[in-house]
Image 1 (cartoon, helix red, strand yellow):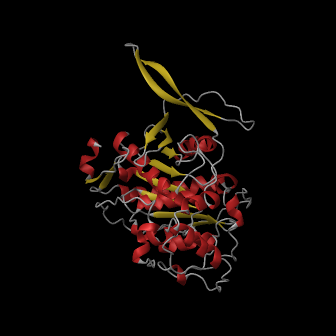
Image 2 (cartoon, one colour; image 1 turned 180 degrees about the vertical axis):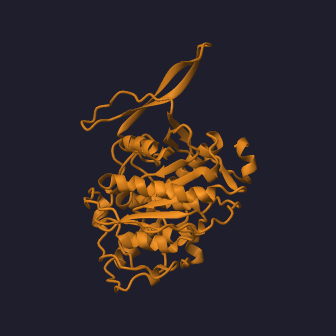
Image 3 (cartoon, rainbow, N blue to C red; image 1 turned 90 degrees about the horizontal axis):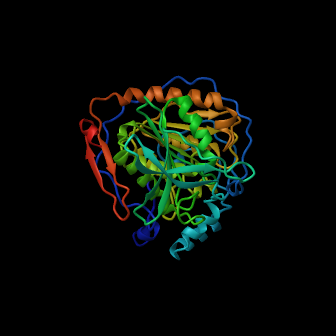
Length: 408
């Protein structure tokens, strides 16, 4: 699907976008498919966020009209009830107010649900002092709990090329070569996610690397996230994971949930990774309020439906049939538009924020099956990888082969 972009508006539309692309591309994955097992049965409860008021759409279609243009997906007539809102958003973008609008309608960072402190410890018999960050998570009453000490749990504070600092956490599963890079939704942070991701790592036997966007948690500029920072932050996190921690890109699985599907797919189109999981994803920002849009507007944010086909990695889509915030038609079209796709999981009765909890056993079972499938493509003898640095003011990309992995 081609976006209609007037030349004089291109710059205004991409003020906050990353300008770095990778020349490297992984070898073509063999198409991986699996027979469709029984669907999970979620309760359909939905956490209330302000975005729920925007997602008012008819029931999902029963079939998808092939990959590619979103215009081929829907038979319903466009009600045209949101035209004025979309036009206003375009005008505000021209006036430089897009970030302000997005903070009101897209980003809903909670008060920080954790604290990070620097501890000084001793290493070995030499009594060498080392510094490390320790996380304290708030309980339901808002009080900070005890620090979480584990040799396989690490917290980092990283500088981004846009002059911000983001907080990340790394959960290491000994013996596993696979790492999930997790981009969370619009109303949570690392403190709220920590326990879930600890179990995620334990059950799936994988390492997990998660980060808070600028404006979330203890990342800088709290309460003022932007689309540009969001896209930059995942580049910074990926650079730290691959360059500093030494995880090859072809052993990284990108996992994006809701809002997090935007930065996930932006990165997936640039770097060769092991696989991509899209959980309750969006076609694009404006399609949340008007899913009948045929061509992406030049001022839209997170044009996922346009870029998902640029990734060669296998894509696994998860979406609830009773999602009241992001209608399942978003998941269906993202699945149809992916270049290399696995059988999706349409969670019967599943809502927007409850799939991983109400259908927990099925959730982990499906992800285990996904890992089994993408591991087949991972065994290729030659696989290109991309290195992205996370230094402020600079993003460097270099394509190397798997034979150079040890040097990463």
